[in-house]
Length: 210
Image (cartoon, rainbow, N blue to C red; front, side, top):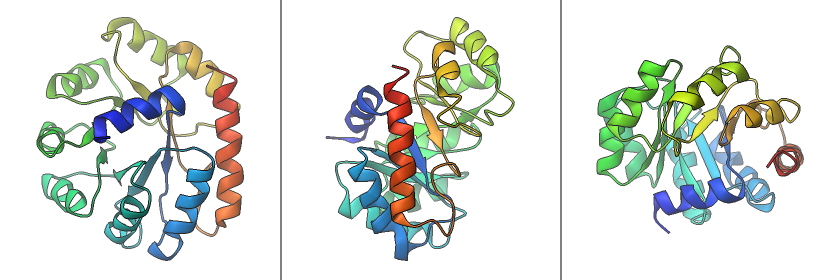
């Protein structure tokens, strides 16, 4: 499957992005296996992690069935670097048209961060495959519902920030297509077993809201 096919498949099965901020290459494969065992197919290594390029390369090589990529991607050059490492996914905290367009040129899935309708429509016009609603701590379910009412029906909305198994249902009811899960799933110092436990907990929560 290509990147878009992997993305579409994950959205139909388990549309949760594992945000592994702070992960080191030495733990990437064990955590990747824990996510694979819990049926997570979307993995993001933020670029402010230790040696993120190596972690991305390891995960992409060992879990080719997953859509592996980079987060906190801010520049065109970073898109090129993560693509060279095997990344197929680009996630940003902001919307930058040049970043989106570079990702598209390299057949990568791109999820820019947006907060307002203006940013959302601009990102979609640039070709974004979905929208990272960030930070979700201040983008309430009511705000998601309002965005959903005006955006094109197929738009994928993924709130990120402060998402827990307990608040997924209200966001889902408001129109969220999936979620990015960060520190509630993985924090520095957690074992792969602990990450696997949290991954299964989130997967179970998602199954109850679809």
